[in-house]
Amino acid sequence: MAAKVGQYLLTIWIVLSLNFLLPRLMPGNPLAQLDNPQGLPMPLSEEQRTRLMAYYGLDKPLFQQYTDYLSGLARGELGWSISSNAPVLSVLVGRLRWTLLLVGTATVLYVLLGIALGSFSAWHRHSLADKFLLTVTSVAGSFPPFFLAMLLIIVFGVRLGMFPLGGAQSPFMLQAAPLARGLDIARHMVLPTLALVLTNVGEVYYLTRNAMVQTLGDTYIAVARSKGLRERRLLFGHALPNALLPIITLIALRFGALVMGAVMVEVAFAYPGVGSAIVEASVSRDYPLLQGAFALITVTIMGANLLADILHGVLDPRVRHAT
Image (cartoon, rainbow, N blue to C red):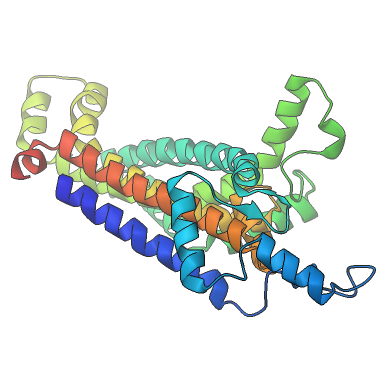
């Protein structure tokens, strides 16, 4: 396990180094928005530009910027956002609560739905309902999250007018009672959550179905059935618990991927999460905010992968004894 943790730490260092370099390879410069003659009463003077470059540390050699970047990460300091004029950490914390709410809700829903549908499909394999579920989940999973989000906006937002087109809450509900505000937030979450659930439920469904089909064919299931156990007890008391090991591992792995998928969905729905912050930082060439957001996503994904490995070792004695 120590070697595996070391591999993850090495991977994180490599990704964080790329995280530092990639924004600086983008065309343009971080002062482009501040130096726009159409956006300011007057463009920046050379003295103002020099002071701003020094203030954000952009006048230092690239290697010194890199060492400052790593030392800041080690201290938990992500720098100062150029576009927001605020600490990167405070900007990301304000955005992260919306992303966690969206991703957490979508994860719970698609995992429960995938396990339920997969178990039902395995129990009724080769039936008309099984074939229907296989087709629907395959079609839904083939859509990119951003494309499916746009379809949901057009159908349920524009055509039917059932849900808001974007945002996380209505401006006039900011001072409303907690219950009314909560319902408004939930209404804004319906479409982005649905987009994430539909594009991710297929993998949990397929894995559950396959694991359950394999488990239901084991000898101990036939023995339990011969003893006269009820079908529901066979399914939930014997087959499902033994089929959960690969599902739990997949959930931990998919959580990191779901964070990346949520980035595009947030952009489509103008949802004020980390994904929207990344797009805004990219437009304004806000290096510190880009670095902080990508570092946060990197640590989340790598942490989810490490958790998947740990859970797999804990739940599967064969892996634990092999290591």
